[in-house]
Amino acid sequence: MSADDSAISPDTLKQISHAIHGWSSAYGEDSPENIRVVSTNRDDAVTLIRPGGSSEMEACFLVFLEGCFRISWTLKQPEATKVWAALMIDPRFMHVGAFTVRPLDQKPIQCMSDLGTVYSIG
Image 1 (cartoon, one colour):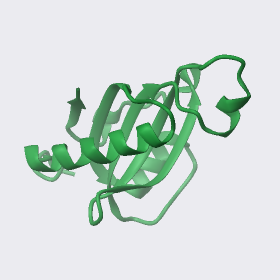
Image 2 (image 1 turned 135 degrees about the vertical axis):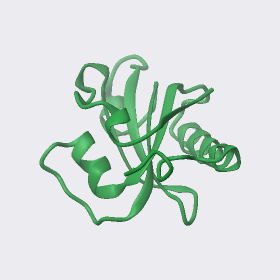
Image 3 (image 1 turned 45 degrees about the horizontal axis):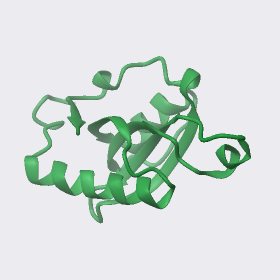
Image 4 (image 1 turned 180 degrees about the vertical axis):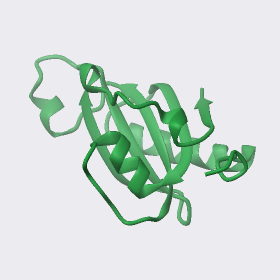
């Protein structure tokens, strides 16, 4: 993937931010932190999140963020616990098509920048 292929326009970043904050709010976190996004494909995104995994080769925006999301196993915690989430946003519809949530100590080792230009969203 060339640098031009991974460029995300400011308008698209606003749409991605809206999708991220909508998803995050739906899962109990109104102020997610450390939001980073890269334009890639689902296969490379899945490989980064879960080495050895695969998916269909479709374009997507891969987003990593941190927060106290209230999802399945996190609901069993006695207190809100900060975790990281990986979201795959479908660029055709600008909504979260898939996600995974894990403890902070289980972040992927591979760097997002291996997939393209990484953008931070505040």
